[in-house]
Structure formats: C-alpha cells, structure tokens
Image 1 (spheres, helix red, strand yellow):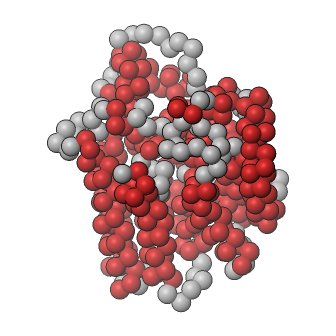
Image 2 (spheres, rainbow, N blue to C red):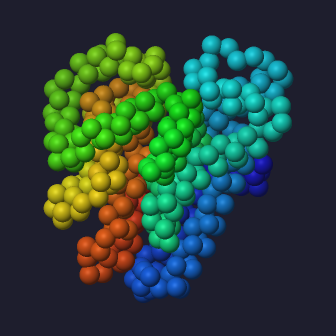
Image 3 (cartoon, rainbow, N blue to C red):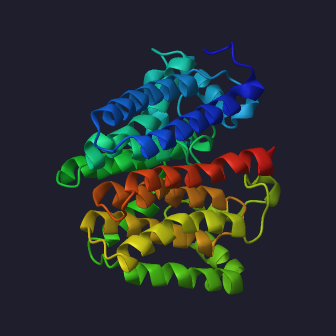
Length: 364
C-alpha cells in the first residue's frame, strides 16, 4: 500500500503529473518531427512508464472514503475472504471473480489486478490501432475527465468498459471480441448499451444519420426529459440497476448538480464535433472509425435523453470512455494539416484542460 502520500494529495499528484506530461509532449510536438527516432523513443518510454505508474499508484492506494466506493468493495472482498457466500448479487460474474481471488490475494493485490484490467486495455487498443504512435491515444485516455473517477470509485463500471475496449482490438477475430464483450457484461450489465450500439453499426454505419439522431436528442430531452426518464425506468433497459439509476433520489446522485447539464453536454460535444469535422467536413472515410463514432453517438444520445436523472453520470460514462479515441483517431491515421504534430499537441492540451480546470475551478 502507498501510505507515504497524503490522502488529500493523491488526486492532485496524478493530475499534475499528467499536466507535466502534456506540457512536455506539447514541447516535443513543436520541436521534433512525429516520425523522428528521438520522438518515438520519448513517447514509447514515457507511455510505458505512465502505464506502470498508474497501475501501481491506483492499485496500491490507501483504503479511504475519499476514493468513494473503494471502501464498499473492501467490505465485500473481506466478507469473501472469511468464506461468506455470494448473496443476491447483481453482476454475478463480478462477484464470482472477487470470491475466486479473495482466498489468495490481499485487498491491495486485488485492487492492483483491477487497476490493470482498467488501464491495460487502454494501452492495448492504442497499440492495436495506432502502432508506434500509441502514446498519444493512451495519454488522451488517462487525462480524460472521467478516468480517475472510474479507477477508484465506479471501478466495476470502469473495468467493464475497458474490457469492451479490449474486445474492440479483435475486429477480425470475432470469437475473441465476443468473449471480451461477454466478460464486460458479466462485470457490469450496463455494457448492454455500448455492445448493442456497436452491433447496430454492422447493420447501418452512416455517421450522418447518427449525427442527426444525436442532435435531435437535445430538444427531445429539453421538452420531454421527464418522459424519457420515466419510460426507460419503467422498461428497466437491460436490468433493474439501470432503472434504479434513473429513479434514484437527488441526494444519492454523484453529479454535483442536477437538471439539464449544459456543461457536460458541452464536454460530450468535443467528440461529436471532432467526428463531424473529420467525417463530414474533411471526408475522412474509415469503416472502423465510423463504428467507433456511431457507437459513441448512440450511447451519448441516450444519456442526453436522460440527462436530468440523478445517476445520469453512469450513462454518461457509457459514451465518455470512448471520447478520447473518437477525437484522436483521424489525426493518427491521416495527415490533414501542414503542422499536424503541433496541432495534435494542442488538441491534447485542450482536451486535458477541461479535466484540469473542472478540478481546480469547479470542484475545489
């Protein structure tokens, strides 16, 4: 366990290390060509060090209420360590996983395993899609607004979404893809939404259609927001937990404010605008990117419809975990601009700035 870092400094250390890496990366993008051996050496070493640091730093964190549901997972894991059975557990696969490890691992070893499951797929999908330039995508993932929250608080949801991303690495090996999608569902049934959205793109994969659908969700939510919440709550939408998230009382919600969240809609629009710009404005044509973009649009559109629900942050994450790759994918696949390497650094800075400013100006 890491007990030499003050609890109140744990997140600031992470976010300021990210700030240092982002600024140093910007410096490299301005003075070193992207394909330069010097740059490739820097991004590979930096990326691997960041991967190792995050797995250990998050996995070996102290047990403290500041990390949200961490303490609840400790209670459940401790019960399994003394031999108590699984009782009426949602996401039975997750609890089987916990109970299988409990006799052999300490709680900190368990959290380190979960940290690996959460972070390694971000590295895996980045290397699979972008080869030697994987660092830029990986950095975008780990400086995302929702990254830290789902590494220490909603860890089951975070791990499930990462398993979904791991499955996306096997586009040409469908059995492995289905296997990882299945693991994701066993960890958290809310993954039905991105999985069904991704499957829908095999039947229709035209981004222009999904852009229009996403835009329509905004006035529909403004005018009929309560109707959508009641509708999806009554339907259960895949399992009872989703219904519970929609109908929970306000004091249980984890967004710091309720109502129509224009600030988070603005945040969600980063990926929507990036997708529109590259696909519609610049004519970027890539079937795999269209699948990723359309999956994001479907999942985020669903969240927009229920944006007033107190646990709508859980639905937001079902699209936000893909935001980084939706934004950066075209820039690592095709040259659009004269000084694209420098622009790439600026985009990473702008994306990270939302995370940084939300912490220091909004939540502090």
